[in-house]
Image (cartoon, rainbow over all chains, first blue to last red; front, side, top):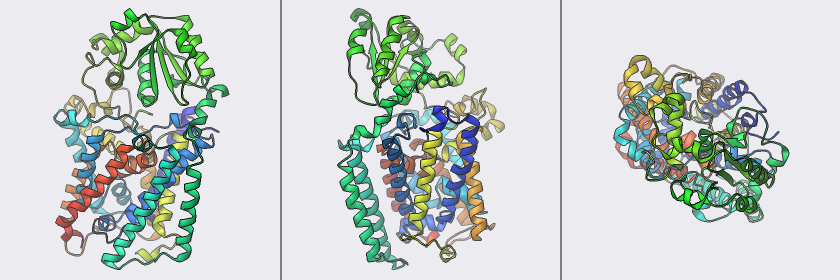
Length: 394
Length: 175
């Protein structure tokens, strides 16, 4: 079965929630406790290089998770375009990270380890969690004071291979190299400063690591990047597009709100096409849209994994067939139901009270996020916070 | 305490735990199409709690009001369920290894109240900072790190930079 199962409709929403309890949440908590991270002293010890288990566990988890994510995609078992990939907000993440590290050294926990520690009866963890609540509420209640900074530095889904201009597999190899190097280096420093490392690396283990790295290097340069996204090309021909489950992204023709969601979910790989006349295009269009004719669009070829969003002036029966033709070649294409006329009140003009009322608060919040991505620059409102991760299945 | 758990493997306990957490993350990717995380749930809980106590303030907050939008159950999200599982998993592991005990863990040179005060201060900073980073060490650094997200790697590096920079000032708490 091709995952993510909750998004392809293989498992129900209820099942998805119960699987979050077990095995996912359960194993998460189990391994946090077994790694010793429910003890604040052990977590804090990393900052004195007295016990570097924390980064070693983190680096190992990152490497395993990375190999699993891209490996499943490589073998056609996971449609990576439907996995929620974290967006990058450069400045806020750097500043947040620094402050987070300060808090971690003072408090001896991060949120995950503190919650896990509460379950083992540690009262310092309970107080830390109360602090996390208070810090969260300070952020939320004084949000206008830092809203501007919070929303700055938006880089979309921005991955290391784009940053390094490398293929995906070589990038993964570098991450493995970094993880192994950093783990061994930190362990060396622990031994140097504290002389308390119980397990010295045996020659057998060193040889094992060397052989694994060497073979990973060879593999890394053999796999082309497109191979990791092959499934997105074949998904169309497997009849996965038009199945009737509720996900709006499964439709060929989408309403304005779903059009925004398409861009929101796939903003890293969406190309937008305006199929109206150049004169109409000049008077206003979605940000980043390119003005071409329907037949030009039908003849275009796209890189694997590309998402295409196309709109005409109003309802256009030909658009549906153009979009379907694109899907035949494996492009994830969408047409906007009702065309530009329908998009206008959502993304071109300021949001009216009537629209706000008809949508409800949650959808308006989502709409504001989408507007920040696709409204023309001049008319776009100040971007609003991203929809809460807790309730919105991304 | 360290000796109470023995897992025989060519690698040490941290690597085995890391592999376990990595596999947990892969399960989340494959089953739910998302990563694991904690602060998404704590934020929803904090917003709900404040909404009970101070409904007006919470509804007027552009940030927190998203979490308590009418017609949705703020505590019905995937991350909340995952958090319940996390509590159970940690509880079972502690029970099985004899770590289940009501206590305050602290360094040798600090009293209980001092430790609790610093835990509260640290927690407040972490909760505040996690909002700017859109996640914590698990939800942002580890999951984003596995997804090769540039922001996650920046966050990860900065967390350690901030921690190492602070360590000297709080050394009496831990050493």
